[in-house]
Amino acid sequence: MTDYAKLDAWIDAHFDEEVTYLQQLVQVPTDTPPGNNAPHAERTAELLKDFGFEAEKHAVPEQEVKDYGLESITNLIVRRKYGPGRTIALNAHGDVVPPGEGWTHDPYGGEIKDGALYGRAAAVSKSDFASFTFALRALEAVVQPSKGSVELHFTYDEEFGGLLGPGWLLQKQLTKPDLMIAAGFSYEVVTAHNGCLQMEVTVHGKMAHAAIPTSGVDALQGATKILTALYAQNRLYQQVTSKVEGITHPYVNVGRIEGGTNTNVVPGKVILKIDRRMIPEENPVEVEASIRKVIADAAAEMPGITVDIKRLLLANSMQPSPGNKPLVDAIQKHGEAIFGEPLKAVGTPLYTDVRLYGEAGIPGVIYGAGPRTVLESHAKRSDERLVLEDLRRATKVVARTLADLLA
Image (cartoon, rainbow, N blue to C red; front, side, top):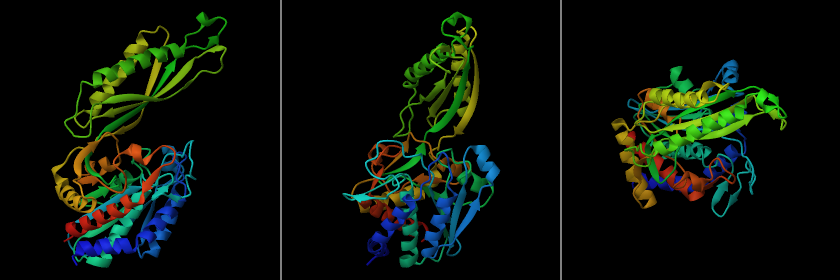
């Protein structure tokens, strides 16, 4: 029996244990916001200790977290050193958006039905806490490597941009792996992703009684003018196409609008929160300057309207890198062997905190347990779920990949 077959057999023999581990991770809420995620890190560290893995707990200072808009963050690193050679990091994030409405299963129950495990973060990305942990356990049980190192990075700031998750660990020089794999889905290996610019636009007018509207300046009318200008950009963006397979064109989305005080008052202030996705070929500085000009020009057409523009997030794109070829080659080889079909190397329109490793000079890819599309997983929607067979097979692919990279 080859080492590959032995790895597969070990994972099959311990799969019920892996599923239980994932259920326990899902059952500890990590709604972000509010972002009180230190308790989940504590629970994860306890569970890892049961497997013989000592997790270093790196708590981000409380004031730093609060200034960021969250409540608590403790990032975890498990270091397993076998000998001289390269270090491979496996990163997954535990923070997740709140469950929202419409669930038919308990979002923190970890229930299993028809071969799928339901719960918030079941697919994105507590599933890869499980796949990465059990791939590492299988590697040590079967291959017993004598070269290189593996690190587990379990972090808690992906939803807010990653700066207090992987970004904080890298900035504090707590880790510097040679290669990394980040949580993803099972049927493709992602080598590039979009960037994201998020902004808050406050449109100022002048409040007035609705009976005498001419005594005021309607901020909502100003906001409407700005919205029309922003949405017009989407028609232009469709003409800008990316050369990266899986990524199409830039686009802008207005995700939140709030303002006004009452139905009988001309609104004096309206706030827009916008999200501008950037393809890898775009320059973020130019994108931000352009979108600010669109907003300012639209506001200038409305007498009495002024705007304040605040950047909330600037997440750079993840660029294709020749340095990740060993990862891509190994995952594609074992992915085809396990799943029985080729795994394409593609880009994704999402943005992730993997870019922070890339900016630190660490080549990486996105691969893990999950379906073909985000839509199938119900990530960020009700009834998020993970098909357990995808978890089993992805764990095998990652274990085999680690064996190759540390050989």
